[in-house]
Image (cartoon, rainbow over all chains, first blue to last red; front, side):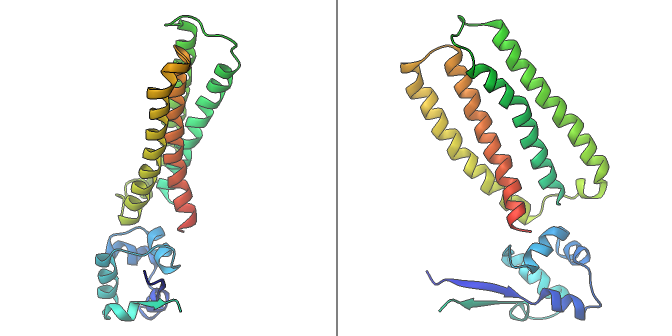
Length: 72
Length: 140
């Protein structure tokens, strides 16, 4: 299996969305503030549906929120 | 700290506070009385009642202290953490029950077997709640 790591730009996107809080983002995508914090810190990989919801909230394509880098 | 992590710590604490003294007392006995051994049954009842009291008081306190978090339904991460902890606990329970149900009847009897079964259930629950608390600690 190819190994890799998932990174995200949620913190940056929240900043550009008027410093949207983790709690507000969580409320809009149906998860808790703690889960948003865990996703943002790269400690929890969200479901595909939650990932699409996050992208929808920021009105950007999914690959502008998340990216996956294979380990070389 | 998420509300569900707090309740997991509380459940783990209640379980250990009630059953560590119970098993310490049981282990110190040199021989077992014939079944049903009402004093031993009484100690088990006391441990269970202590656990229930800690859980009730603790859960009331946590609900009052985190009113908003307490009513939020579990999200996908909460469910994944719960599912993983239940899986770990299931393996402990299965291994323990094989030991208690299939092997111990040939080597011991009475309360020795009963207490071993209780120990397996307590260990499985400790792994369950400990697994939840551990997962929240490492994923936040």
